[in-house]
Image 1 (cartoon, rainbow, N blue to C red):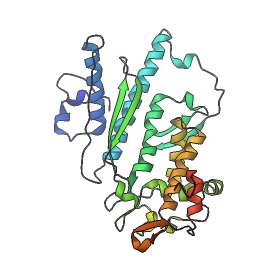
Image 2 (cartoon, rainbow, N blue to C red):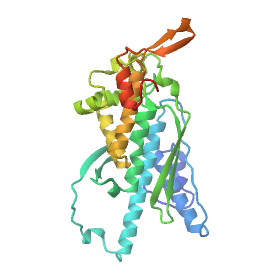
Image 3 (spheres, rainbow, N blue to C red):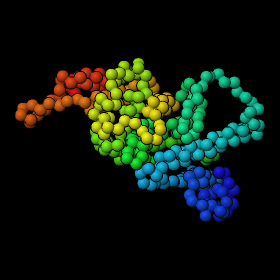
Image 4 (cartoon, helix red, strand yellow):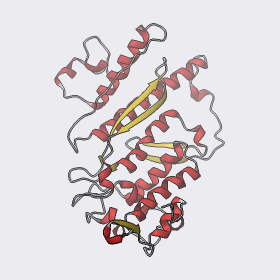
Length: 311
């Protein structure tokens, strides 16, 4: 993947034969990174050297996966830059010549596209590259859904800004989302699903977690917003139990505290119960009121922390 960099090469990597090949995601990412570094070398102090990649295509074309590959590749290049910088600071000695004793037990977390990384017990010890990559499971759980053509379709647009320092090391990132398909929350076409997070919670939570978030006696078939289409699984072989674990791991890596995670899942659980809440007409249909006898009312009040009057 890291080819020569002679003049005239497409994307800054590969050979002249690249002109005759179809675009490749790694070649594009590599060429973009090299172009940025070249501009940094030639730029005046303080001058920005921005590069942009636009990932477009019809539904199911692979935009989400392609974006993951690009982020994975850039993160890998960043890690190599950081390692090279550390070696230089040690006077050119290999890092392996001064092994460090590991004092913390670390758990391997599967990242799917990336293979795996070692998750630190303390989120503060997690590298910025790992944090950037771990934003994907969160975005997908709350913003992706099964559609007719795609089992992991992004139902929103996103602008991802990845920041590098002058040495080419990744130092931060931000994600801006827009145009979320809000109507999917209450209605899905036949053969489609609501957002992944609802099925992940119902299928992946432990018994204690289901009790905590008042979901112990329910399945996806019991809520209107997850059952109106009659579709509950995915065709691509991905299990909701596995992606729920990925979501929890990602929240931890991204620095969400236990309390913040509980708040997130409490709101999502409340949305499930809200879909079953009944509304009764009063005063000849001119006004309405909440069905006080509805079994989902009490869980909603507890999960949101509000009174029946305020609701």
